[in-house]
Length: 188
Image 1 (cartoon, helix red, strand yellow):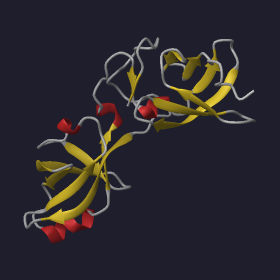
Image 2: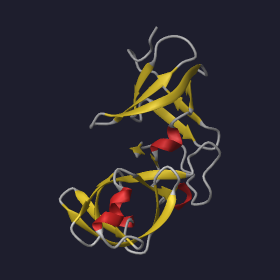
Image 3: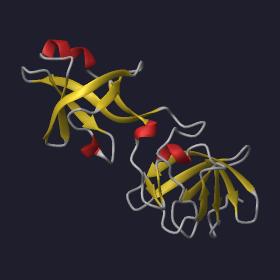
Image 4: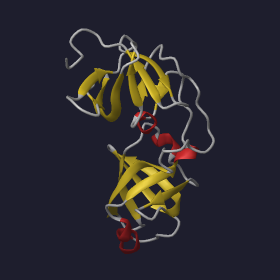
């Protein structure tokens, strides 16, 4: 998730994802069974782990098989989960190393100025002078702020810090990000 204060776009909807967005979002990766009741250790890959509770349907593996969470509890940094269909470690073991997904249209709304990474990847990046700079292809998490990797049609890649002085507007509807190139950011 990227947070940008003062970025122009604030439209967030809870309906179906716009064209080009994934139908499913990764929220975790199942590791190994734990104990004798079919619990699995899960590495959490979401900013909203509280949404993974009893009764929630998640989708597991490349075929997005639906499974309902029966129980969950924390074990250090890992979440221990059980699913309705698996009562023992041998049965649950078939889920080992599988990714866990939720439906994209079931994601929580974010506060104004915050965006999911998948909403930004692929956006056209345009300078405040109207120049097409390329497409956002990757988001690097640096700790202080995200850095957007912009790949032009030709030439060197751009690294743009995701800060309000650089990112002027995010237009989800049109798939565009308008930016201001501070001195030193342009590859020229």
